[in-house]
Length: 163
Image (tube, rainbow, N blue to C red; front, top):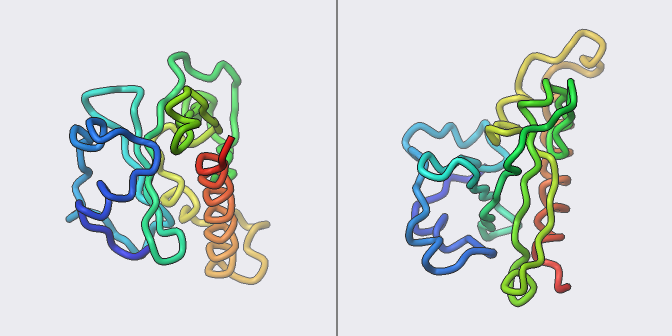
C-alpha cells in the first residue's frame, strides 16, 4: 500500500458527513509499515462501535466509516469476508457502512463480516500452514493479498453503488 497523509485520509471518506470527518480520530501514521498493508483500518477509541478503513482504489484513496454490530457473533468460529481467515467468533464482527451519497443520507447501508480489529493485513502475513505453501510462502502471500484487495474492492463498490 502506498503511504497516506492525514489530509488524504480525511479527504478520502466517501460515506461520512463533514462533522464526522472533522471528529474522526487519526491512527498513528508514524507506526504504519505501509508495505505490509492492503488497507489502513482502525477503530475509534472514543466510540467503540465506530471503525475506519482507507485503501488505494486506482490512483486515489477511498475511505469508509464503519459501524460494528452491538452484539458479538455467537458462532464458535467465523470467517472474515475480506481476508478469509477463520477465527473464534468474537474476533469477527458484522460491520455496516452507510452508502455514499443520497442513498446513505436516506439510511441505506451495506454490511459484511470483517476482523473485529480490522487487522486483515496482519493476519494474511502469518506463516502459511504446510499444506498452503504450494509455490512458496511469498506466492501464498501474494495470492492472499490479491484476494483481500479484490474482496475489499467489491465491498467498497457496494457502498458506492447508486441504490
